[in-house]
Image (cartoon, rainbow, N blue to C red; front, side, top):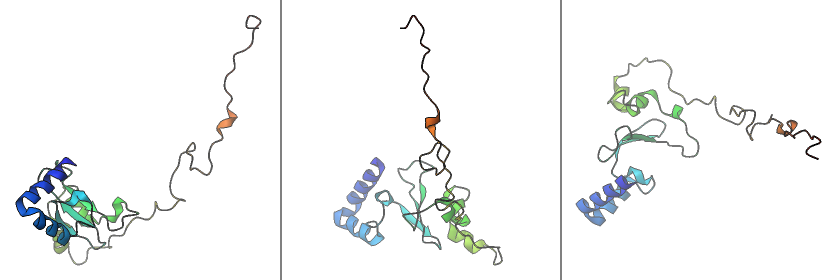
Length: 152
């Protein structure tokens, strides 16, 4: 969070408050999260996911991220393979660059994995409160010491 504030203050110092606010408005940062301030929009995939990179004042390994198009329900299978390589530092080529290098006949198009969606597919252990076949924990009774003549 401190890096975000420092980056915003540096941008205000360089461009002035009006210039900074104009840039924020033009770049659409008012609709996105605050950590995108100072980041570079690297690309957008065919699903509408936005990919960002911020090289200054950011820990290595956290300087590339995706902002999913669908905010309410998202998972990692919504990232196509060409952008997956860029996000995980397998390649420095962006997804758009890799799509240009891809042969015309490349096989099936990437689709999101829906196999784990819905309440029917979510696994809950037997003791979990949301498991419909929840264990009955009342079958166990607490231990009671045997009464002896000395205890009476």
